[in-house]
Length: 191
Image (cartoon, rainbow, N blue to C red; front, side, top):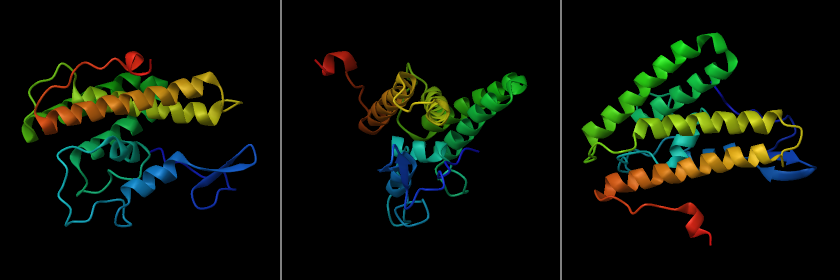
């Protein structure tokens, strides 16, 4: 399981990069998801139909998704991140891990179909969660392994994760609004 560790000099969720304190992404995610101090939503809050991207990222980081009362999609998201870490750490088990990933993707798709008004989509909800898990594992690996954190590969990996998070948000909005969204062209949005 991937749980970010401090560099030893970090205090209160701050990491030191180039001698300057910076708030770590993990601490921001943890604060956004730990609404009652446990990492879970208070019982009086209505449960969301699907977790938002913040909750998925928290699951990938190991902050949520390990308790029986957690949203099933966050539990499976956490498991997908662990499988992607396993692929990185044990290349001889890739086929076995990929089979398990396929089962989890199908479980997510089945849950979404059974618990929402979603019609079979062109894009699999499970495949998006799996891609996000892979992107997070890759981005975290690059951040910890490159000599220079300003390396373009690091930026590209985090940008990919952010793009996938936007895609997840769009899919969730489709389900909650029960209407398809217009095609997005991120390049045209920034002109």
